[in-house]
Image 1 (cartoon, rainbow, N blue to C red):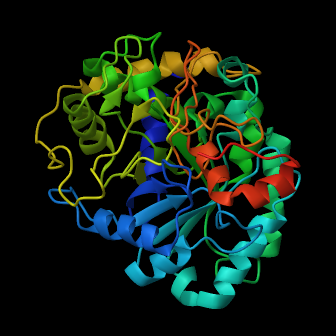
Image 2 (image 1 turned 135 degrees about the vertical axis):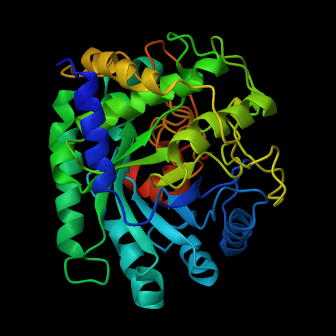
Length: 409
């Protein structure tokens, strides 16, 4: 279906009207560090304190997106990020791992335990729940092309888990927290996944123009590429709020098409995408405050060793290079390209969806958040948040779920 410029703009305006009352600013946080060791409370405290104290930031980054409720090296213990969040008053976008498993019982057990321990101190910080991360992408044509061993989940699995979660927490302190799912933009514009859109309160999109090597991904075109994917997602959402759950640009790494990883380009992307389109306009979780996935060939951290002095100036400019008219016209063609296909052939790559390096853990949606999902027309891999959440779960839980040891990142 071809979406006109008018329909895209109308959908965008509607989505803005029904978006969250607060336009959260945050980062993604996996369960593991780049050396594959687990994060504990002190590690999360360091991240959350740095995020809130970033010099020159266009707002207070006092929110975090997690990929799992489970502490690494355990089966169902609550992740210690909860304790750190309570101490620092950090808002939380929860994540539950849903790929390669037929149960989210351990995820729910960990969350229930944390709510029992911290009560409303924790419940009041939870701003949303994501049931899964890039699962739909990983079972698409593009996802399987980029990572034939990737493990994802179809819309029937995701919707089943959404129903289970809502039922289990219907009488809890988080009963009214909005439920969503995170995926790549071309998963959302794929009509076969509409059941997931119908089942959620909001949708989260992961988008990395850096990996769009078939679309002229020079840094100067990154804003327009982002707009095309973002507006297509808004159009597909049918008026439901769209949260940007992952986007960012590497400061170092291999050249990808025309895209060059550098501090200068990471700053430009921050300005042209973050400042121009996202910050204080829609809930945004930047990728990333610090790197978590040692296997990823690109590094996205905007800080060095969690210094509150970032690698580049975070202050937003007042003028931008990206033409405002490009996004709406581009998104029209982007939507028509991928909608209604069983596996999108165009799309964006996500640094957190396919770089886990483990078939069981799947490349997207992991705790590390930098693995490498690729949802672009060319077979590319980027850091993937989905894989990161698996990492957060820990080797014990992974073995319990998948019956095999995973490579944690």
